[in-house]
Image 1 (cartoon, rainbow, N blue to C red):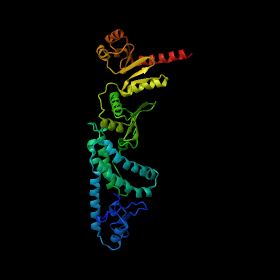
Image 2 (image 1 turned 90 degrees about the vertical axis):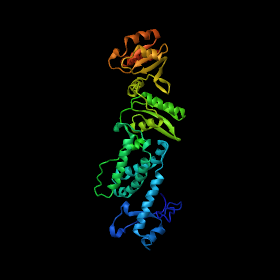
Image 3 (image 1 turned 180 degrees about the vertical axis):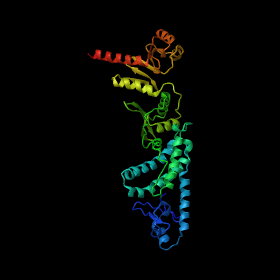
Length: 372
């Protein structure tokens, strides 16, 4: 915490004209060769001298200083936050620093420097554990552990405990590995799980909330990625839709989980199909990704086991609208005869997913003829 651990001193150890921090061994190093975290205390030069040279303080007193500082640390970092973004601001820098040490020393095989820096990770982990334990209620949770960020947070706490307990072991065998999802949840490093949260409606709700806060920048689609760009506390954020731990947490924070009507995977597939064929489109509005404009055609995507007359009546589409059923389980049978009959009266076109491809190819061919 930046100060001498002697409660009667507490002088600042980090100063503009140079640090004065000193590591003191509680039990003499010459007698024990013990350089572990447990046998070290951080003191100013004066208190270090009083402990080592004049023996003004006993090892028992110094151990008590450490206990007091640990309690102060717990109280300082045990703050309860009102939202996850506040927690992220406190935890993310600590996680990022740990990641730098891990990548630069451990992964590069520099075990000597790793052993020296591991104590910094241990210290950061204690802060992170206290912060997380005090704010577990902010994590997204699900009855299935595979879809629960709260489960990830609890595994991370168990990893921190094992990391600390096993640090002095020669082999350092650890069964609970660092859950990489924790870096995703706190926006450090995305985790591409290759799948998507199903509901287009959830994504639309998030974009609507961001627009309400005037923090929305863009929703983008590439051949391999789909993402949302926005501002969070004056920081540019890019949210990849396959980064599921982070996406689950953002949906939870903004209250955007919705029941699935149209599956996001199906919608992105047809949008990318148009991109591959260089058929431009625009969304009729950012908050409704299920409606696009292609030239003079308004296209609405739905997902119905069998598109019915009742669904068409409920939608009350404008004349000239094209309605595409993405639930293409059985070809033409995905659209009822009654729906097709009503579509003629409404002057709208109903398409299965397969026929939509032909419709887009027709637009592409028409563009080619017009260019000639």
